Image (cartoon, rainbow, N blue to C red):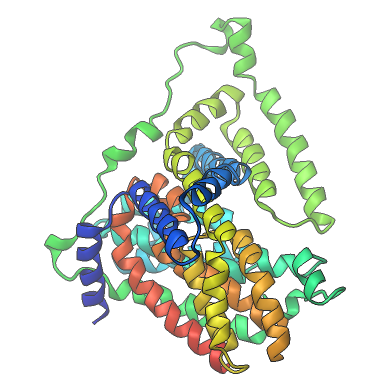
Length: 444
């Protein structure tokens, strides 16, 4: 049955799902029309919301580009490449490979979503090159499936936001701070995480094609340009002074060691593993692993080629978010779910509404900015725990990422695939996660 569902949704995705950029354009038009029809906004108003929001994610877009570039450049270094190949060799059957990448992504994203997203994508690519008989689109989809755990882990933006003073909670309940022991480390969240960590890899394995002719193996030549090693044409003695500086191991060591000292001290003092810190660690490690500045420059040049999707599409999603928030559409969606909720069903309906809003506002911080001011006062009125409400928003934000290309773009760039190649399989994962999480939020 699971295999049949995967095949069914994959056929639909192949036929009907366009390129991720076209998907973003269609969402833009849909939200624009909904703003006109549901919110009664004028054409000029919706145009202003779209244009005004278009560049609101520039800082975040640059962070995501750097996650992809520094992570990929680090993976291109010989030491890291050897480690990845060693891990990949353990995945010596298609079933093991698919289960391993889903599990690694789940653990990696629970620890830190930026780290997990890139490392597991690179691992999937390495596994596909050394293990025969793997259906490559399913392998990449399996890697992405572990991303559903990011917003219940140590880099969960909503739960970390409310663990300190923040504007939303100050308006609802001044002085209220919700510790992570009631959100990330609550029994409810930990049980759901454990169930998904065990079952999502199994669901992926059950979707493996049965017929040999249905298996699409990776063509190693698609990675050849990225991984082509530069051949030295001169000895160090024969280099010009400028070339000797470019190939100086000393310069790389100085910057790398200073960077590592800073990172270790920062984390030892209790600093959070934010996206900026992850990028910083990737950068200094990459410089050290490549040994010379010029080698690292070449690795970065190769990695930058994969960033087109992020650069082009993130501004469109920022525009969509601008229209959703400024027109009131996001509030309308959320308020409708609040209106039909009871204290017993409120957390479940909050989760479902968050899943819907996430399709148009695929950002944890954006999700909280949209839904926090609505759901937290409603939770107060219904007598529902603030912690459970915040967790429901976070789970909803992660849930529908399985059919939202926004977060898949860095992974797809590394894997050299399109969204239509994996969405059939990730749709099945979304359905499974929706069932498990809904039951957990309702009964635990």
